[in-house]
Image (cartoon, rainbow, N blue to C red; front, side, top):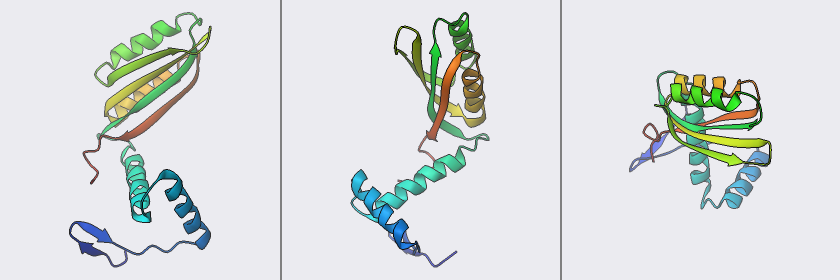
Length: 146
């Protein structure tokens, strides 16, 4: 690791990047409204740390499970509801949207132990009749500095 300078709780370090990558970073930072590179880089580091930490295990995570399915599929809604009841301690909130005559979108906000959330997501997404599903995970925030 390279030299790190600490100033009142903030660490300063040097990063070397190809010039084209730096230009892309600066463009993205402007587009997203970051006031400086440090804020953009810190946000990206937090995002990657959350991904890294969510590599499940016993850590608490938060996120969403999004499902798109045909609600006319026999027994599908009942099966999805049964699975959700089995993991009710992980589900904070649920949103059900009618996309068209046949299709529904369900978004579940989840919080709890990472491996259990992954198990729930895998079972829901893998249910016969679910056309698309995705687990999006973030941190609970407790393990990341401001």
